[in-house]
Length: 232
Image (tube, rainbow, N blue to C red; front, side):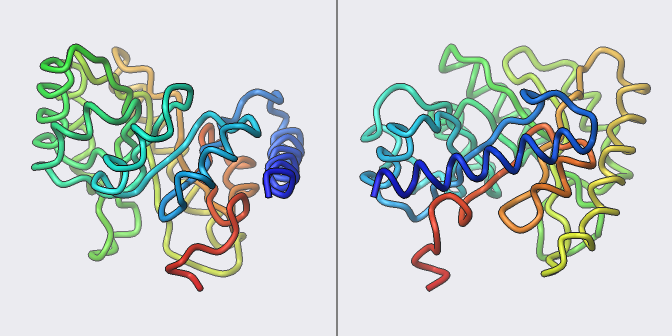
């Protein structure tokens, strides 16, 4: 089993390097995050043993049970929607939160991280497509959230995150990825005190296109771990 995972991991890494090369980007420009939601502790430990040390979970409750059993080593990313009442727990479990979508949530995370004596990194999730079923800050409200981020002492907002509308053709996601890159470039100009250099975008079906459009963090689950229980 571990050998099979190591082969999938190497395959994904080769695809990442090739996509970065096509875009004229250096080999180390992209961070691969293995999305381990619904995977057993044993499966995740296999991934860690194979050298995957950036792991992502969607749900705080699942992560609370899983992360302590994995032990030290991995860096944990929260990639799913975060409710404000779970900010305290998230600030203790995760190193990076990809789904900051309001000034209220940002403030809760900053206070929780301060209380825990920790510093978190974060991404602001932007709702470019206006899909009501998905979280994310509307582009019109992005500047207000980034102004609040500039005043945080324990959450460093490093960039933007996107969940594009689902389409089986990865090329259909390209305009959304390109648009997020453009939004980030404009935000860097307006908020010089924030780095905003990172873009969290791209999953198993479209991460190569996302990399070609500037992704620095790709969130890959199925291509690494195979079908999940909820997909079966």
